[in-house]
Image (spheres, rainbow, N blue to C red):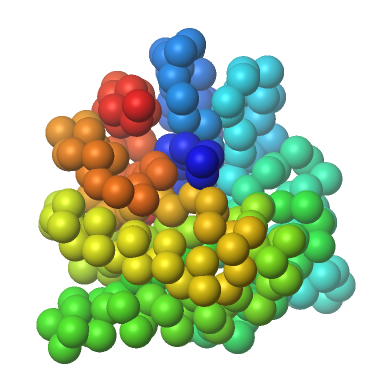
Length: 250
Ligand code: PGA
């Protein structure tokens, strides 16, 4: 059985005080009997403090939103996988569509980032997903397969099987437009097949859905086959909504 994971991607939001209040609120309200692991992805400067407030909780862990493709050295402004690992971060979001789109991150670069992560024992939450024109042309599966092949499937099966994949159709991110349960089910089943085709030991890689997940639509999305959790943006900034999404995962 794949692990169940609900991850909150705070993106470039919140003051330090707001971020601490949100971390406390989520940790305090975390259901004791829940099945899902909860992963918070605050901005870099808040990682250590969020960890200090949540690290003692079972089933809570921390993700960075990005890392450098380089090991170390003269790369002003970059943060390395080794640094993240050394402060207790467990996961790194790699290849979010905002990184691909606004920071021109290519699959070749993402493949390097994935390598750095696993070399430092960090688990990549590897994002993939098609744009609206690609879906309209019926290319969504081939786009996602190519993104997985180029960015993630270079890993040996014993490393790939510990990774996490997030399917985030670009047209559903931050738009309030959620993919239908049928669309999500189809893509997740397809991704499961891709994993199976890679190596039978990789079948249980958790497959998260992301794109306008909220407290109202989470239960229905989680009922779809092969959906093992969510990568939540906007709704993860509101403690009550995020907790309600966590509670929707059974
Ligand atoms: P959203 O963002 O939930 O605000 O659509 C999801 C994401 O970007 O991971």
